[in-house]
Image 1: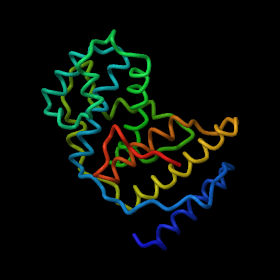
Image 2: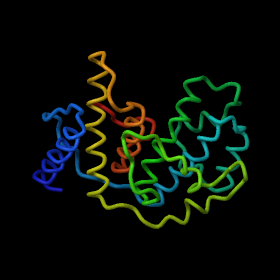
Image 3: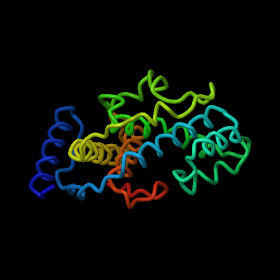
Length: 213
């Protein structure tokens, strides 16, 4: 993308934010050019996230680990996720369980990127129908629902959405710093932005995504 195109995206997104009566920072920089991951890598991340979410709903870690191994997904695990899978359920901290539960929102963003869902509204939690699009590990389903995905949104679509969520994130953080409650949930915005940041920069590490505002 040219610098002019990036600036235009910023202007459009700032107007979207203004129209919603959120605050925005016109001085926030534009994002770097997309360096998008392959669809296979994205489906691998979606698969392990879907599996790991079950742990936060008390699925036995040993079962989740075996399911991931059975479907040749271990290479898609981050270091932190590998450490989780070495523990027993009762060894997990509240932070670890909560972090896995928040994967719902990051996965929702990746489901948008792979055209499973049509929109990711920042004012709404992930859809109640989310589970119908994903393998049900409680029923010991295989990974076909994710493996069969064949499309990824364009770089421009993903870039535009990430830029929008980057600017939403600034709003949420700045409101928190000011001691004011934002009109949107910072957790939703953070997790979706993180997933899109990972998607659009194939050199990034899932455990260490740059999330500054």
